[in-house]
Length: 128
Image (cartoon, rainbow, N blue to C red; front, side):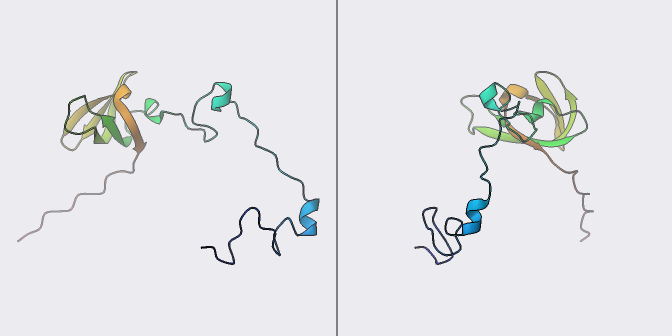
């Protein structure tokens, strides 16, 4: 079901660019130029966003992050999440300080991750 306000690309009704005489005078825009970082030129797969394809490889200590890592074969789950502050970083692993302790996460096992804001202050316990 289509509504009168929705037009398909083939629809040349009143007000569409194909029926408007002034639209024919406007220059057409071609495909965007390939940037040096695009995958078609052998660059990173991140495209034009400017972020690396695997941003966790460039995170420095002191940053609060959440990462989703693959668990070993035979585990009851496929992934687990680690939330905390990076305390150490090497070429192979991140050391993350969580609320429950320190966790070392191998970079090869990270499926995804992102930088998160600082933790909110903890509430004081209820008196009761």
